[in-house]
Each structure stands twice: as C-alpha cells, then as structure tokens.
Amino acid sequence: MQKYHTVVVGAGPGGLACATLLAKAGKDVLVLERRRWIGPKVCAGGVTWSGLRQRLPESLMQKTFPDQHLFTRWQRTVISAAQPLVSTVNREELGQWQLKEALGAGVRVEANHPVGRISEHSLEAAGKGFSFQYLVGADGSSSTVRRHLGLATRQVGVGLNLFVEGDFPRMEWHLDDRLFNNGYAWVFPHRGCASIGAYAGRLAVEPGVLRKNFLLWAAGHGINLESAKMQAGLINYDYQGWRFGHRFLVGDAAGLASALTGEGIFPAIISGEEAARTILDPLYPAPEMARLLARHHLHRRLVAFTGSSLLACRLTMETLVAALRVGAVSFNALEMAG
Ligand SMILES: Cc1cc2nc3c(=O)[nH]c(=O)nc-3n(C[C@H](O)[C@H](O)[C@H](O)COP(=O)(O)OP(=O)(O)OC[C@H]3O[C@@H](n4cnc5c(N)ncnc54)[C@H](O)[C@@H]3O)c2cc1C
Image (cartoon, rainbow, N blue to C red; front, side, top):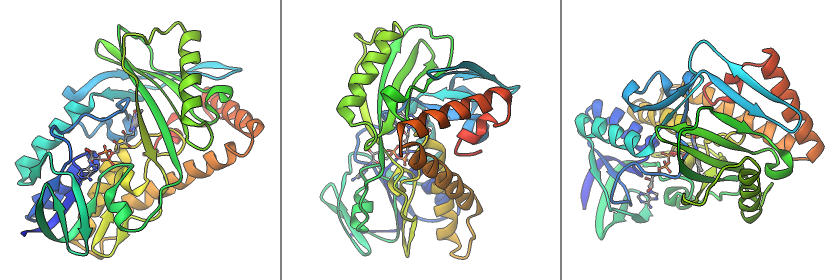
C-alpha cells in the first residue's frame, strides 16, 4: 500500500489545479488518471476574460474575440467590449500545460490508472493499493468518488461537439427554444477549425432529440458536418456539496458546471484550488468558492424557471439578449466568474 497525504482522482483541470497547489505547499500528492494521455476532453474550449483568460498564458489561446454574435428567434445582435470577452483553448494543450506545472511542483501523476474500489482511507487503481489522509474527487461528470459518497446525479446537461476544419471569423451563440429549449448551439473558432456544438439540459431535450435538432440547425446554417466526428459529453450541474470530512469533490464531479451555459473549466479550477486551500487550513473560509456557488445557484434557478414553460423560456431569453444589447446586463452576467 503506497501512502500519500492526498490522492486526487482525475487529471482534468480541477484535479491538476488542486494537486499543484498542495504540492507547492510541500504535501505529498498523487493524481490518478484513467486515460493514457492527459488533456483531451469533449469540450468547446471557451474561456472567459473575467474567468480564466487572464490566468492562462497567451500561448494557450487559440483565438480571442471581443465581439460575441448572439442569435435568437427574434433578434440578432453583437455584444462588444474593449477587452476580449471569450477566448478558445485546445483541451489537450491546456492539460499538458497544467501537467507540466503539476510535475514541476512535485506532484506524482499516474496515467492509465482507473480508480475502482474506494474505502474510507484507501483505494485501488490498476491493481495497486493507495492510502491517503485526504481524497479529492476530480473525476468529472460520471465521478466514481461521487458515487462512493452516495450522491446521485440527476441534473445534467448534454453537450455535442465537432471540430470542423476551416476559417470561422465569428464567435456565435444561437438560442432557439424550439430546438434547444433553454440551451443553445455555438460556433467557437479555434486555429484552422471551429468547435461547433449544442448544449441542453438532459431532461429538457432528450439526447436523441438534441442530436436531431442540432443537425437540423447546422443544415439550416449551411454548416457541413460530414467530415467531422461528433462527440458527446455530460455536464454535471447537480451540486450537492463539495466538502465531506476528509473527502472533497471538485469541478464536474461536484456538479459545479453552469446549468445555463455548460461552462465548467473555470469552476473546476477554482474549486480545485479552494479544496487545496481548505485541506491545508481547515478553517480557511473559501471566499472564491462562496462566489462560485452563488453564481452557480443563480444559473440553476434561471434554468429551472426557463425550463418551466416554452413561453417563460422564450420571453426570458429574448429579454436577456435585449438587455445585453442595450447594456442593461453585461456579458459577464452569463459567466461563472461574473
Ligand atoms: C460538448 C461540451 C462542450 C463544453 N464546452 C465548454 C467550454 O467551452 N467552456 C467550458 O468552460 N466548459 C465547457 N465544457 C465543460 C467542461 O468540459 C467541463 O466542465 C470541465 O472539463 C470539468 O473539468 P473537471 O476537471 O471537473 O473534469 P474533467 O475535465 O472531466 O476531468 C476529469 C478527469 O477524470 C478522469 N477520470 C474519470 N473517472 C476516473 C477514474 N475512475 N479514475 C481515474 N480517472 C478518472 C477523466 O479521464 C478526466 O481526465 C464543455 C463540456 C462538453 C461536454
């Protein structure tokens, strides 16, 4: 049995952020990752200015957009700002950059180690046993650690994504309640390609229907998806807590993604860091976590309200976009860092 101060399950943005901070404070930290290679994840790679854009190196930015093009049934509008509102990152590059930071801080990372059985102070991965004082579940929307804690996951969104080759000049958000209910379709340009996809709550739009509606939407916008591979992923926003004695949940494992937009990279990194600070000092008040939870709650309430009827959905979406257009609401009201 190998002994560690903290074992982190999952080498996504949340797990690596948490492990790096703990190792910098001198703790003996192990990250166990089920995949062979760190980084790749079904994701559009959008990061916001008030969220991560300023914390990540410029070299990770694929493309940057001060203008956001919003389309609803009744409106089309451009929201502009002096600073870049949203940039895109490649998830493999983000993961490899975070991995380098973690290894540099002294974290031990074991890829190809899917975590199976977990008990109070130990777990098994790849046929080996590991014991810990603290356990951090950073293992995404289908988290094994979350299941071990006995938490169900009901409130999830489904995201569809394809990387389509070509030069896409605009960052676009398409809110069409007939197709996506209170979700949306997007065009997020990267270098030489764009992430094109759609997001909706799983209960609001059943996954098969979301796929069908997304293809209809793409065809209607002259977007050819034939040469690209469609991938799907769950986005967990069913938050039920992050601190369970000596065990913690962060990021998607904790259900901290936005119910409204599906934004989850920023919540994963912030919650990972706040979990690390709390492990180092149990009396740490976790103010960034409190802000994140307030924003998460707001997005979840907005989605519950707009999901209650198509009329509520359409009127709210149209009002929100009109308010953005006239500047009554700022774009970062939609962001998890806002
Ligand atoms: C289609 C789509 C588009 C998205 N677009 C955006 C976007 O533009 N911007 C944004 O901010 N967010 C976006 N998201 C959400 C974002 O991808 C997630 O919220 C974010 O990756 C969560 O980070 P995490 O560290 O919590 O988990 P993850 O990134 O999911 O990492 C979890 C890690 O744990 C590993 N793991 C899982 N189980 C085990 C196990 N048993 N043992 C060991 N390792 C395990 C996984 O392999 C993975 O590496 C999108 C999601 C989808 C599906």
